[in-house]
Image 1 (cartoon, helix red, strand yellow):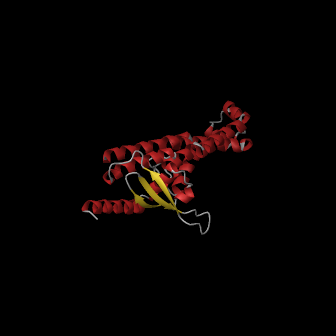
Image 2: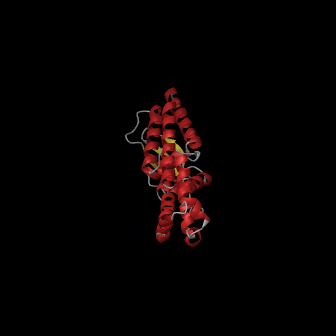
Image 3: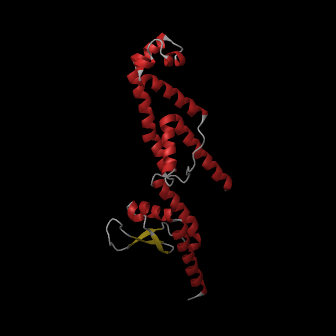
Amino acid sequence: MSPNSKDVSAMKDRIIQHMNKDHQDSLVDYLRFYANIPAQEASTAKLVDINNDGMTFTVTNVAKNGSPSRSVVVHINPPIDSLMQARERLVAMASEAMEGLGRSRWRVESYPRPSLAGILYGATTGIVLGLTLFPNETLRPGAKARQIVLFDSENIARWIYTYHREIRSVITGVAFYTAIMPMRRRLQRHSYKSGWGHWFAWFTAALLGGPVACTSFDSEVKAVETQSAKKH
C-alpha cells in the first residue's frame, strides 16, 4: 500500500469513527432524506464506508425480529474530489436533510422566564374564563367577583353573561389551538431532541399565554441564531 493510500485509509477511518460516535443524528437524517429509509430503521444506522461518490451504511429493520442488516448507499452528488472535502460536504448535506425533514439547525433547548406580556395575557384570560365558568355566581348583583373585577358594572356584567358561552369557547379554543398547532410545529422544528419536560413547559406556556408564547418562542430562535453567528 502506497503512503498516499495509507493516508486516505487513515482519513476514511477517522471520518467513519467520528460520524458514528458524534453525529448519529446526521446519519439518521441522511438515510431518511436521501434514501427514504423509515425513521425506526434509520435509527440503527452505522456508517461503514465513505468515498468520493457516497457513503455506505448498514441498517436493521427492528420491526422484524431477527431481520438481518442490509447495506444502503447515500450518494454524494456531485462527487467530491477527495476525502479532504468530506467535512464541508457532509455538513451541507446534514443541513439540507434537516431542512428537508422539516427541522431547523437552530435548536431551542431552554425555557425562558415568562414575559410580562405573557403574564398579563394569561392573567386576563384566566380571570375572564373564571367569570364565564360560573356566571350565575360570579356575575350576579352583589357578587364579590363582579365587584372586584368589573367594579360592579351592570352593563359589562350583563354583556359577559349574555355571551359567556361564546367567550369561554373562544378563550379555550385559542389556548388549545395554539398549543396543538403553532406551538407543536415550532417544537417539532426547533426542539426535536429536547425531553418531554421541555415540551411540556412550552405547551403549558401556550395554553396560558396563547399567541404570546409563540412570540416568545420565536424570540428564543432568533437568540440562538444570533449566538451561533457570534461564535463564527
